[in-house]
Image (cartoon, rainbow, N blue to C red):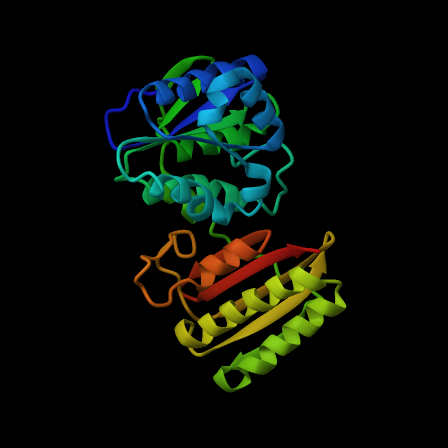
Length: 307
């Protein structure tokens, strides 16, 4: 596996079967434990069991995280999984296996996944952290593997390590910053500061009518409150909220005239002493998926919630 020559190391690991998966991950974990480095494994649940079994007694020293749960919304992986573990171990190098893209990720989720992989590089560029990202090269589309080369400076394939000739994470973030297709039948409410309570009431009532209940409705209520407030405070003083249902989920988006200049907005926890600046982070934590399109003409932030 990659030799550490700079603070942050971020290889993609291509595997085609369990044997290649274990050959690329288990020595990485064992070498970290032998060096006294904290190690976390954040992969989908089926892979957790495979690695636990192979690691044997070493598994007790590893922090295991089910990425299918913790990383269901790719936008919360950096703050809630990667940064949470790295920040808890500020002294010395930290090792993480993080698998955010797997067969079964939906078409709506994938752009957020690949942007996440690109943004890892900016989020950790000066940290003593190694994050290995496995990719199922046998079942993932060739376009996904091409994106892995663009988001990782190093790729390990069949035990061979190579520098990526197409590494360009900033380009990937820009390419996937595409306008979000607007549904034809979404209920909409335009608001300014004076109509902010009405916009929230409208959205929550619509979500309730579309089937959200209990804790999920509470999550929706807080998420829409954060986004509409951000529109008034940071997005030009007004916006439009839309609510609809799609594929068994309730979707909500807020559009305003603001521009998110920081691609890591909502994915980088602010310093504890900072007042405010946590609205989009909260939305990422509460919801199942967040999609963002931002540009000089304005910003749309869309979140998905399943009951």
